[in-house]
Length: 440
Image 1: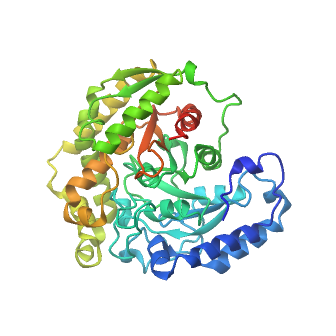
Image 2: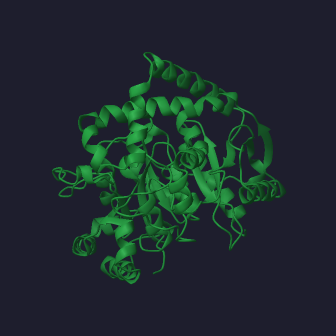
Image 3: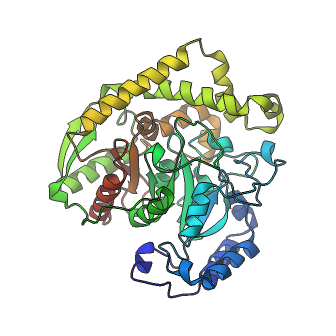
């Protein structure tokens, strides 16, 4: 199936039938086989998709909309009227169906997008690796023995396989950027306040962000415009020689494996050769991100799930339950101190960011490990995989990821980072850098 980009629609009305595009995608899904499809989607109703496509074809106004005909896979975290939001957990399977669409779902539909199934995820979105013992774990698009990345695992694989044109995900500590990077895709985590959370099952109200995974940054930007009800500045993309970028060199470059080390060095050389001004930067507060994030997120997750923690002992993923129950051991005042530390770091980062157009770091310091490796060493690998992207959530920043690996290698990602409120600038810079790195 040909990928559909919003750029192809920018010149005018949709020129093809949405039902034909949807039918091709459904055929592609059927072709991959029932077991694999079940690990990607927690629920998929072809009839509903075709009904949405037929409605779009019959609505002239929506056919003129900016995302007309775009097939967007929906993470099983967002309410859709008539569907049960299970958040990747069998604990919630018996919950009542949603009576209304989440705000972001309503905005996607108003922009002409078609909701294309509900995708698998780490239970309650509380892991960066994408394992799910209830619905299965979809294999990485480049090696099915390796993890897809999480928590937006099914969404990333649906896009990587060309089944969906894009995916709607959430990002509390990297859940958009990790699976995007691990599957050679683009992803964008906006400033948290940029996209409303109404109708989204929460992990951490202080960190949860909503954004897209897509084949390219241009598609991410088109989706972000709809999700945030905002528009990009009417300006050309920045030229390489006008950019001054800080290269983060503490914490986020620790423990990189051989390939990520080589890919990051090669990416920096490519950008420098194109005229980008690069300057190494050490930002001391990054060292506090892991502890602060763990305290705040676990505390808020425990508040969400405390009523059925005993049930999760038998129905839940024990790896996720362990992370939620960690809050029970926190000392009095510990979470409040973590919140204060975070606010100080956000202020310091905003001040530092005034000196640069953006910052750069590897999205993840390692290539995707195998599913077996993660199952055997979950705590260490999950923490390592989450480390880099979660520092941006700690700073309440925004960040995009684009591929930086050589063709034929396992995917690695370059993260383009800005402070809160810099969403459109970061998307524009990411699109410029994406073009410079494309030949790799």
